Image 1: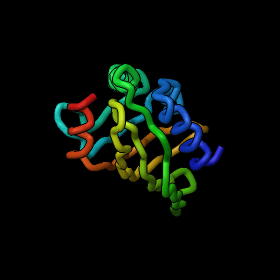
Image 2: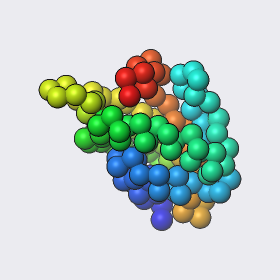
Image 3: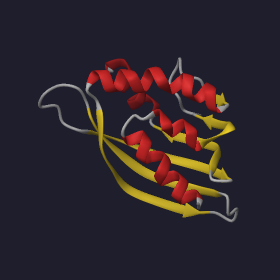
Length: 137
């Protein structure tokens, strides 16, 4: 699979808050969140550590009724390294509550893929918006 294929496969799981997303990472894969709001860590090493971080967040999102309605403006940029892509996209989320308008959050991922698994993902997003979402979930 190409890095773009791995991105699309992984984010199919993310859209459903499905922890199989974590299985898209190598056993020793790294997830970097340079702009993560406190108390989220900025660097997570290893598939099981990533699973431990995401499991309660995915469960809380599902329990709250939050869902991802769509991904928009997906742009995949290849780099000089055939294992690395840069993906830009907007996530349209539907917060809990009746009649609540969907919200958007833009992301940029730098993803390195070896042997069909993510070995490094650097995830850039608006930390103020993310902190608000976590507070409301």
